[in-house]
Image 1 (cartoon, rainbow, N blue to C red):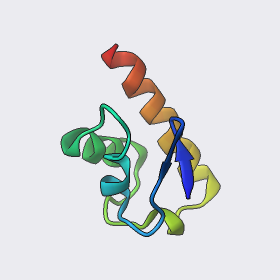
Image 2 (image 1 turned 60 degrees about the vertical axis):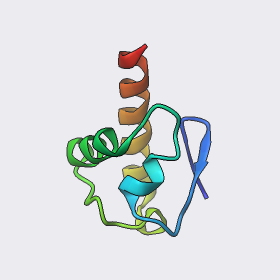
Image 3 (image 1 turned 45 degrees about the vertical axis):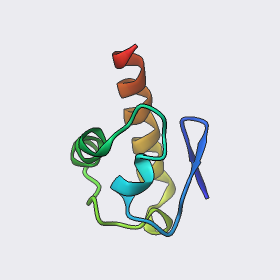
Length: 68
């Protein structure tokens, strides 16, 4: 499992669905994160390389800090 924002997100699910497992990130925000990072929303988390995961981590971190 990949770890994003301190949460283990499912590897076998699509990126946008996996992101919704993080508290505070719903469907709309998850899709926006995918668009911003350039990751196709239907890509499985297990198919992402480390650079793409790092993009997700940074964007999720920025979104979570922005909403506080």
